[in-house]
Amino acid sequence: MSQPQPADVDLPDALVAYFAQRETARLDAVAELLARLTERERLLVKEAAVMGWVQGMRHHDVGYPGDQQALITVVDACIAFSDLYPTITNYVPEQEL
Image (cartoon, helix red, strand yellow):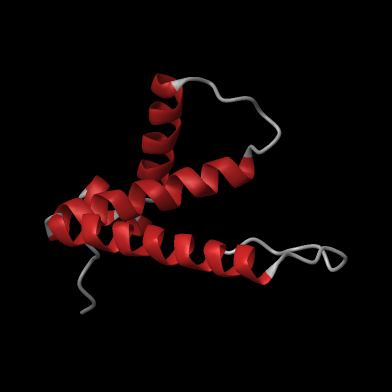
């Protein structure tokens, strides 16, 4: 989660320590929330987050189309790559004979 800092910026030690403390607190909150989810819910969140990230990186130059279109785009992409998002698509690999 840490952001790279430009080489020519010197931050006070107290501010660097505060940023580290806040990052740890955020990571702890994420871990706590994920621990409350069922395994299926965690997998759904993971797959949706990964696909959302992939779509965002592919189309970084396009404005946000709105929630409904974003949902359609992500689900369509999950279907197209069903083996990568098995919780969403119910993909089951073929058994090797």
